Image 1 (cartoon, rainbow over the protein chains, first blue to last red):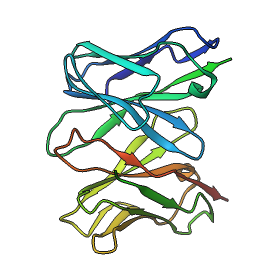
Image 2 (spheres, each protein chain N blue to C red):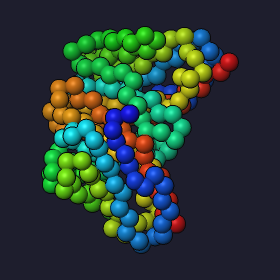
Image 3 (cartoon, rainbow over the protein chains, first blue to last red):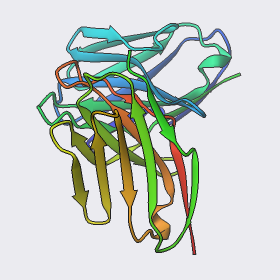
Image 4 (cartoon, each protein chain N blue to C red):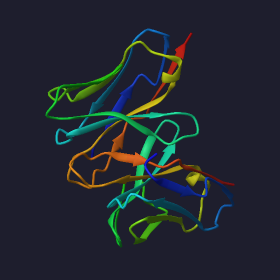
Length: 113
Length: 113
C-alpha cells in the first residue's frame, strides 16, 4: 500500500449535517486528490491540492470544500450533506514526478439519509 | 475537458482465456494512460500504464496498447485466472497539469472456472 489512510472508513449521517473526511499520507507527496465513485460514473475528481494551502476544483466540486494545512493531511468537507452526496470517496496521492503515478487510499463509504 | 469511454461494462471469460478492455479518449493532448484494478471493498490499484511515446507495454500476463491517431488504448490480459476477477478502470491525463485523471466508467471482469 502507498501509505495512505482515510478516516472514517464508514459514516452514516443525516441530510443537512456537516461532514469532514480525512486523508492522511506518509509519503510526503506534493499532490493529493479527492474522488467520488458512483455506479455508472467511474471515479470523478472533486478537488485536488498541489501543496500546502494550494487547492483547486475538479469536475464535481459543487457542495464540497477542502483544506490542506499540512503536507500529510487533506480534508474534504461537505458543509451541508445531501442524499446526492451518498457515495464512496477516495483519496489519492502523486509525487509530481515525471512518472505521474497516482495511488489511492482504501476509501470512505458515506451514506446521507 | 477530457472524456474517456470504456467498453464493455461487463466481461465474462473462462479461466485461461484472454480478456480485452477498450477505451477511447477525446483530448489529443492526453499523454498518460494508466489502468487500475479494483477489488471489492478496496481502493483502485495501479496495474500498468503507458505514455504517448510508446505503442505497447507488457508486464507478465498484462499488456496495454495505445493508438494515438485513433485515440484509443486497450488492456489485454492473457491466461486469465480467477484472481483477475475485479473491476478495471482506464484513465487519461496530461502530465504537467497536476496529473488530474479522467476515468472511464469501469469494466467488471468475471473469470469463471
